[in-house]
Length: 206
Image (cartoon, rainbow, N blue to C red; front, side):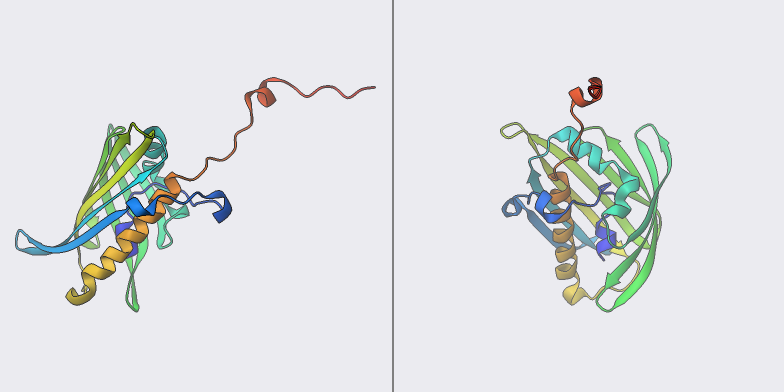
């Protein structure tokens, strides 16, 4: 199930543990409820967390769709098919794991971007009966950080046990959000200083 919940994060693999600051997971909130919507049983997802990363960095990472495979373990490929203004069509191949079963997953989704504010995701076709999600980014002026909010509804087109479904999906949502918060708060790769670029090395003494 984790692949279904880690859609469209656009994030890259974290650095070594020693270089990766831990997000304030005490501020991570996650809830999953099974509800009936238009006569269909769906899972409603709601999660939020706060990172120290500023809004522009968060936006850049979350919209870097084609690097998802560096971060999502069960995602085999992620390709931007087209871009038209603020709408992006994306194709994904991956594997969904449920208890002792695995199955291939193919999805085409549409991401509608509201720059520096939100990303709305809608299922176009693929191995889901229903999938919609929204990422909201809220600046935190007091710290210069960003609050990241994830909301969605999903209904797989394969059997999910009703007794354990909500608990399993909640566990995956929590895992996903922790990974996202950790990536967003990752230290940026060190860049060479301006002086090292502009000032050539001194010629060796003769």
